[in-house]
Length: 242
Image 1 (cartoon, helix red, strand yellow):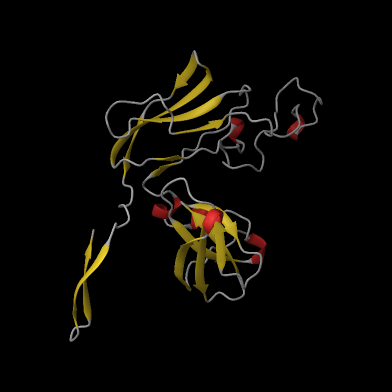
Image 2: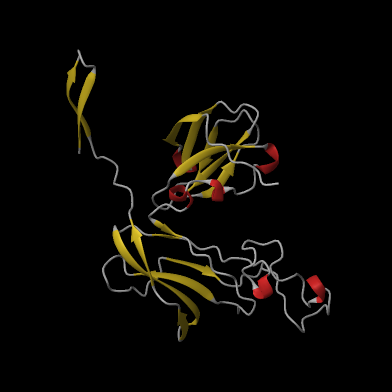
């Protein structure tokens, strides 16, 4: 049974500098019997240890961050339920998070790179994000690997191919598959040409067909806020934002 993410009854979300620790995210919640989770750019970043906790502390983000506090049952507090968030929160319009199945034949040192033209029309060779294709902690499965026949369904190797992992049905023979965790933050507004590149060495690269992504980063924070006047009868304050 899938846990339900509760976003109602939560308000007064406030982000405050917390020195070298990063940022303190404080909030008010009427979900007194539930635990709470913090999502940053649509991904689970932290969760509470008790139902009474009303603050998270997160490291300084590398760039723009959209945050969402949600409530869940205690048994699901460590589960990433970001798929239940609205589309614009699951993947904000300044991020790109491709679903790339981790190949069974990945080599040590092989890297997946995300390239962008930064909305200029000229693709840059400097990746905006990258991830190792086959890190040492990923279990291997293959025919001919020891122990013979001890993997899932009698496959050789130490684990079945993707069973219980991220993308259901995306692997070989319709099995589940592990996904490469890579995300790019795109800071320039406009249409970006995006290319996924697999690099095995400086001379051995393979590019996928480009895609085109419309990027809309949030506006920069105001540099200044100046009160210009107050209408006492209408109870309206006029402000100038710089």
